[in-house]
Image (cartoon, rainbow, N blue to C red; front, side, top):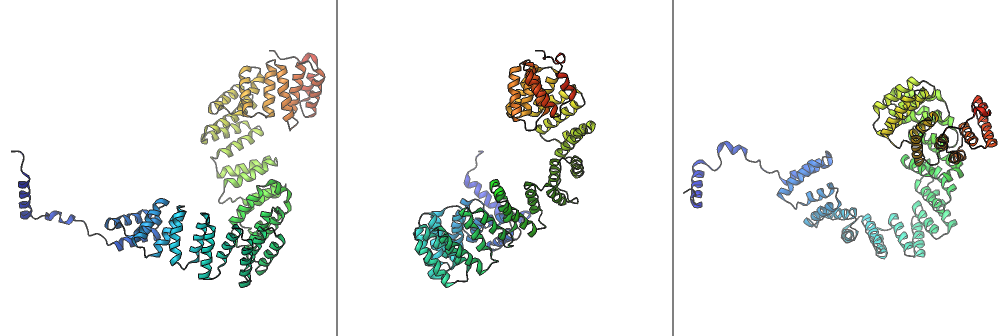
Amino acid sequence: MAFIGVKKVIAIFLVVVFCCGFIPQHRAARQKAPLKPISELYADAIKAATIHKDTIAALGAIEAIFQQDSNYAPALNLLSKLTRVHKNAIEYSERAYLSDTTNRYYLEDYGAALVRGEEYDKAVGVFRKIVSRSTDPNHYRILAILLDSNRRTSEALAILDTAEMRFGRIPLLGRLRQYYLLKTGQTLAAEADARKAIEEAPYLAENHISLAEIYAMTRRDSLALDSFKRAIAIDTLALEPWLALAEYYQKEGNKGQYLNILERIFSNNQLPLEGKIEEWKRLVGDLSSYRRFYPQYDALIKRLYIHYPESKDVAVLYAQHLIASGDIEQALALCKRLIDYRKPLLEDFTRVIEIENHLSHIDSVRHYTDLALAAFPHNTDLLHMRGALALQRKEYDDALVLYNEALQHADNDTLRSTLWGAIGDVEHQRKEMKRCYKAYDKALRYHADNAMVLNNYAYFLALDNRNLERALTMITRALALAKNNSTYLDTMAWVLYRLGRYAEAKRYMQQALSLDRDNSAELALHYGDILHALGEEFMAKTYWRKALERGADKEEIEKRFLPQQQEKPKK
C-alpha cells in the first residue's frame, strides 16, 4: 500500500537516529551559540542608548532581553524612556514598576510618563505614592500642581503644608502656596505667609518679590513698588528682581517704565542673548508704541548693540532700527560692514542692494549686484535684478542675456512668467513689437494671471490700436487681480478710449487720477485726450497744461492745442 502506518514511520525514524546519531557530524557546527546573559544584554542596551546614541541598537538589545524575560524591569524602564509615543511610554513604565514595586525610581518614572502623556488624574494617585516615600520637595510641588489643575486647590495647599512640615520653608514651594492662597481668596493668609518668609530670611530677594506680587494683585501699588525696590537693593546685579519689576510694569500697561527697566535687563549677562533678541522683535511689532516711545526704544537697541558688538543678529536689528528712524546712510554703512566676502551670504548683499536701490544709488546697486552674482552666479533674483538695471540703462542686449540666463535656472512657472514678461518689456524698448508680444504670450502661458504682463500687453495693443477686444479682456482681468492700481485703471481707460467708449473711459481715468500719488504726466495727458473726445475742451486744455507742468513732451502738448491735429480715434 502507498500509505504507511504512523507507528511504522516512528519505528523507522528511531532506528535511523540510533544508528546514525541524532545530529549529523557535519551539521553540528551550525548549532546556535549560547544566549547572552540578560545582564550583558542590558549593559549593551544602556551603552547603545547613552554613549553611542544608537536607538536601533538599544532596541535590538532590549528585544533580545524580552526573548528570555518579557517582564525584565530594567529593560522595560529603559524602553519607556526610548519611545516617543506617550501611550507606549506609560505602558512600559507601568510594567516596569509592577515588576518591581519596591524600586522608587520605577515609580517616579511611571509618574513622569503619566504627566508627559497628560494622564493627570492617574498621575495624582501615583505621585501620592511617590511623596509618601520621597525626600525630594519637587515631588510635592508636582503633586500640588496636579491637584490644582484638577480643581482641588485646597488639597494642593494641604500637600504644600505637609512639605513645609517635613522640609522646612522652601522659597519655591512657599511662593506656590501663596499663589494658591490668593487663588482661593485667602489674601490675608497669603500676605502673612509672605511676611513670615521675610522675617525668617530677610536677605532673600525672592521673599520680597513674593510680597510685592501680592501687593500688586491686591492693587496696593505703592507697597508693591517699595517691596520690589527692597528686593533689588539686596543685590542690584541679580536678574530676578528686575524681571519681576518689568513684569509688574508690563501688567500695569506702563510701557515707558517697562522699557526703562528692560534697558537695565538687557545689560545683564544672566539673560541669554536669544531671549533679548526675541523680546526686541516682539516690542518692535507694536508700531504705535515704537513711535510713541522712540527714545526708550532707541536707548534699548543701542544698549544691546554696545553690549554685543560681535553679534551679527544684533547688528542687523540695529540697522533695521536706523532705517525705521530715518538714518538710512548710517544703516547702509553698517550693512556694508556686515558683508563677509570670505564666507558670503546672499541676505547680506540683498540688504545693501535694497537700501542702495531705495536711495536711488543705481551705480552702487549695480556694483553690489555684480559682487553678489560673483558669489551666487545662478541666483535668479540677482540675475533678474541685474537685468532690470541693464534695461534701465538702455543696455538692452545685456538685459536679454541676463534674463535668458535667469530662465535657465528658474524653478517654477511663476518666475518663468515674470522673466518672459521682462523680456517682453526689453523687446518693447527695442521697438521689436512682434517679439514683445511673443514674449508676453509665453509669460501668460506659464502664468495666466500675471497682472503686470496683462496690463502691459493691453496697453501696448491700445497704443498700436489693434486687437482692442483682446486688450479689454486682458486689462479687465488685471484689474480684477489688483482693483485699485492707478496704472491699470489708466490702461483700462485708454483701451476704452481707443474703442470709442469715452464716457466709460472718463470714469476709469477719474479713478486713476484719484489714486495717483506720483502726479503722473501721462495720466493727466490721457485724461485731457478723453475730455477732448467728449467735447469738454476747457477741461481738456487744463489737464494738458498739467501734463506739461509734470514733464510731458512739449511738442506733444502743442499739437493738442491745434484743433486740426487732434482727432478722435476711430471706433
